[in-house]
Structure formats: C-alpha cells, structure tokens
Image (cartoon, rainbow, N blue to C red; front, side):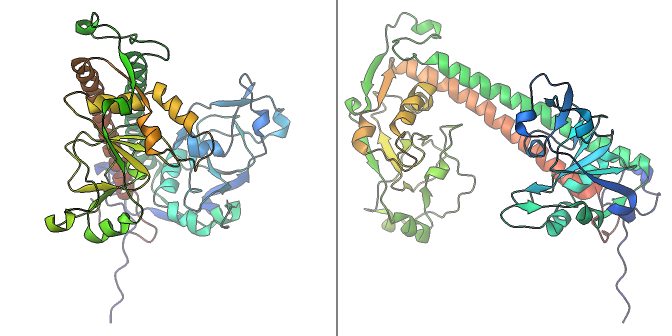
Length: 432
C-alpha cells in the first residue's frame, strides 16, 4: 500500500510572479524570532499629554488591527523602567478571557513605543505585518490550543516559540502584507462612513423631535412650519390595543416552527426586528387560530423587562405568523390616526429613552406593566408630518443597512483571502 502523497506547502491563491518560487518553509517561531515580555504600565500611568507612546494589552482587543501606525496612549513613566519596541515587533496578549480571543497579534511600526507588561513580543527579520496576519488567521487556532487556563487564559513566550510558522521569500511576504493591508484600509474607510451615517441619524433624531419642555422640534420640514405645536399625550389616550406574550408559549411555537420574537430580536440601533438568525416554518392555519395574538404590520413592540425600552417595529418583511413572549409589550394603533413607524422612532429617540432608563433604575430585573406602557408620553404632530419624519429616518436607516452589508462583505472577503493566501500548517493541495 503506497503512502499518501504529502501536500505541498503552497497557498491556494498565489500571486503570478511567485508561482514558480516553490514551497514555503515551515519553521518554529523560536528559530526565526526572539521572544520577550513587555513591562508593566498601569492604567493610572496613562496620561493624555505623556511624553512617550505606549500600548497596553487590552488595546489590542479594542483599538488595533494587524499593523499599528499610530499609537493612541501615552505615558510619562521613565524609559529605563519600560520595554521599548523596535519597528517590526509583533505583539500578542499574554492574558485574556478566552483561548480563541487571546490569538490577537499586531505589528508595531515604530521604534521606542513602550510595550505593557501583559504583552508577548516577537522580534524577527520576518515582515511583521505578514506575520501578524498569519498569526491572526491560519495560526489563530494553533495559538488557542497552546494557551492555558479557563477563567483567565495565559500565553507564554515558550508556548509561542513552539508554534510552526510558514515563510515564503521576503518579497512575497511584503506582497501579501500589502494586499491584506489594502483590504483593511477599505474596511476602515467603510467603517468610518458607517459611523458618520449613524452619527448623522443620531443628530437628526435630536432635532426632528421636540426637546423636553418644548412643543415644536428644532428642525422642521418647510411645509409643516405653520402647522402649530405638537400635542403631547399618553399612549393610552390614543385608544391602542395593548398586550404582551405569555410565559410557556415559546416551547409551543418552537415545536410548531413559528417565528417567536424575543428581546434579543430587538436592537437599540434600529427599530426594525433583527431576524438574521430566524429558524421557522409557517404554522398550519388550523393550529394558529385562537392561540396568542399574532403580530401584524405596523405593530410597535417595547421590551418591558430586563433591558427596558428597546423598540421594535413590525414591517411587511416580518413573516406571518409571528408571536412575542412575555418580555415584550405590543401596541397596535389605529393607523388612520397615528403613524406607528413615527411612534417607534419617537420612542427610540434619546428623549424617550431617558424616561425608559429612569423607569428601570430600580435594577436590571425591573419590569414595566402594561398599565405603565399606556402612560408613556408621546408628542405628535399631524399625521402627514409624522409620515414625513418616519420616511426621512427610514431612508437613513436604509443607507445604514446598505453600508453595514457592504462592510460585512468586505470583512468576509478579507477572511476568504486570508484562508487562501496562506498554506495551512502541514500543507494544502495545489496552487491557484
């Protein structure tokens, strides 16, 4: 019986100029790099106008990507008490919450940056950005396997030294680093666009609704500027149908395969329900009769336990039949008298959210009764003006959704590239 053919150490996707360059070399990190530990910099030693840039391990999780060109934190700790970087150093946290999260590498692109005490430092002649991408991608699970601990996970230099790293020639390393860096630059640009849209929406909502104690908004569409003051009233004054789901129905709907809306399907960013992870089939007509109140288009949903005041709006995209559990209140207005989407945006505005926060200040388990729901205040202009405001904010939400999808697609593209631009340890079959 012949031995299986050993797979070649080449990536599935390779730039044309390197396709005749042969296999990558498999090396232990300890043979191509020296390993060090940073020195402690406490949170109290971070100062806004410090003389020296510094990096603490937690910032790798929250701020930095594979390459660190600009350092955000500074300190005045004397340089003799610090571990200072050399350009091209790769840093990895020495501790973290989970084994998979600790596999987070960044390349420091400047000399003399103070590196905190809970950082492992890899110093080598390899292209540091290339190495960071490989550690964050193909080697991520290898790092997770050697990390130790459960409640707090630790990663030591001796463990990193034993990792296998795959190395092509320096020019190919640079090419891969440049390719992935360009994708990350696109991701950063698209993220900034998304953040700008979200900030614009937040500012617009603050101006399109009256402030506390005021009866007209700061910003009003021209055709409504002579339409007088908005009327403030309680939800109950609008004679809505108000109900909530019941405990125990979740199991029934799960068994029937119906869509069952929970608080986790509501988000603070959007009034639209998050059904990206929905799993359901339509309930047979005979089984749906007489159970609980089905959601209808234009219903307004409000979380009334735990995280109180998250707003949902039922639009035409929500499948039917669908139901809610006991943690959500349903408010159904006469749509000839009130624009439900407008009310949803109003309740999601900062003005209303402050009142929701005040109602839950007794603790995270505080609940809001349906009687209290009917006492919630809303400020209403004429129905045409309600429609105009709702349409404006819905258009902006559409732009935010499209931008979010574009950003997600870029991140997926990057993930796919990283899977193809690096061989896996042990080799992959064939070249692109």
